[in-house]
Length: 274
Image 1 (cartoon, helix red, strand yellow):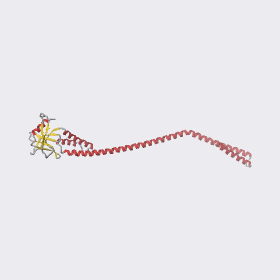
Image 2 (cartoon, rainbow, N blue to C red; image 1 turned 180 degrees about the horizontal axis):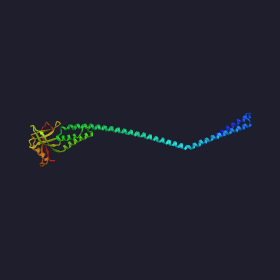
Image 3 (cartoon, helix red, strand yellow; image 1 turned 135 degrees about the vertical axis):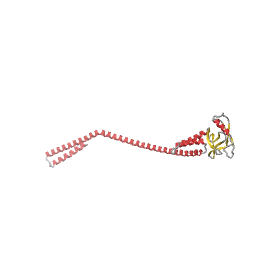
């Protein structure tokens, strides 16, 4: 198409030159020379344009694979960046979800801790209310457990101490035990006695010569020892001797005061060797 256009232009130029020559503006030789020169110039210019066009086309053909490769690389890099952004977004979502889960778990643990603290407070109040009603041997073990607890103890340590106290009380209640102590007699003298405990609910005592005897129990929330001349001190001493394996086992009757104070009655409790 470019060749046809260029040929048409050459024809127009040639026609113009012929017309001018015909009108006498130029001589015949001059017209012929001008036409030949103009044709040569136009032909050279056209050839130069064609050459440049071909060079550009060849250059484009050479550079096209490289450009297409660069475009492909850029698209791949763009795709990779998009994937990284998506993964980053997903990772951020995972972090946020994990954070929310940890916060929920922390809130749950705090609520559980609060419940444990309230339960521990109630348990401590109940155990503390028992203290004054317990016999001295149990109080001594409770004091030792409490002494191991400092003011900065956490909830877990406090709970362990309370459970240890209750465990000591449970062990004491499951056995018959003997303890030695000093009691103030009705006549004002201090008497060394041996005490025979039936768990933490009841106990008997007598001194070595059988002059003093009595019982112990919780009265109005406090453990109390009561001297009672109607109790056979020899029976109590025999029961203690059987327990300490200083006497042959046999059935021993020991009086027990009923829980009903109004009855003020004495019943019998059998105590033998373990």
